[in-house]
Length: 454
Image 1 (cartoon, rainbow, N blue to C red):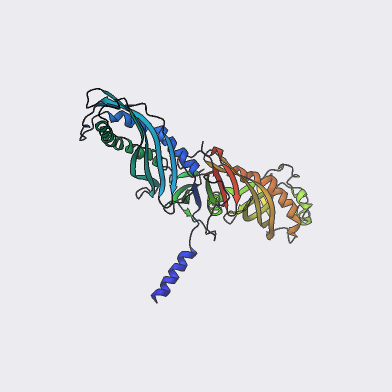
Image 2: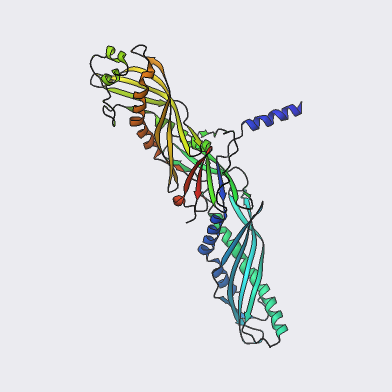
């Protein structure tokens, strides 16, 4: 009996599995840029060098050398490699000059070239839920050492002294630099799960759905967009039925963000009420005058009901949540609702409903990025279905209205949709990402943002 309950529970969990919503793949291009930026912003090697000559509380001075100073720190060269299931192996190549008074009583100058290596393990912060790097296994490897001390002056003693001195000084001086740089990198994840507004209708925030995974080519971060209406209700992301995957034909080392069709649908659902409109303009774009006389050309029954021409007013209401579909190179927005046309009476103050139609139509979507927002612009693709729900002018063939309604949606309604969409949808804020150079690709069930470093 227990095993039947277990199978039922597993089935329930499988059936309610949510699409991760967004998938971030960080290639070496972005990681190199971010680590180098953190190194530059922190000036950490210079700071460590400046601290090296100061006597630290609880730290014994180095035997045989006094007035220790470090200068002429070389610009670091950073090399990164992904370590599968761990994080990033980091090597910082740099150099410096160490000066002081030697045990022999004279001025000593040591020119050092070295590598600092460490593994930066990628974790999920237990308190914040954000990604974080933590260094471990830091080592300082001497590449070359030059000194102004005479080479024939007790070489074994001098070499032993230099070796012991450098191995005492360098790890304690340079390894903290790795940790300090990671502090800068980790801070750039801080806004990832911040609430971001979608106009006055709701908010979106991105949270980790699992611990980030490192492969030999990239770091993968699965994100769940939490979409909430202004009233506090959370819009549940529907299950797309297929695992969210990035195409495999992207350049090695490049970075991408994939937004699923379900996440975009959820965000558009925030705007559902804003897609409801009432239009009373007599003249709209290239359309003929919006009057009962014009309408009678498509429905003769209107002429029998209205001998004098009256202005028309139209109310469009979206009844179902908007739905986004995506095929390679093409994306559409599906809208289901009703369209009601009325005639004005008594100087336009009272409306008399002519008919109420149920409609389903789709719009082609073009995507672009402006700042940290995804923008959409639509154009009418097709009126997919049209059926009469009620009529005050009697029965008529609603299919005769197909051309009239199609033109009306394109000229009168699509501009309203595009105006609403100007609010834009917030993109994940991570690593100080600048989206201005992003290139977009529409793939099966998702929108790919090809990310570029500055």
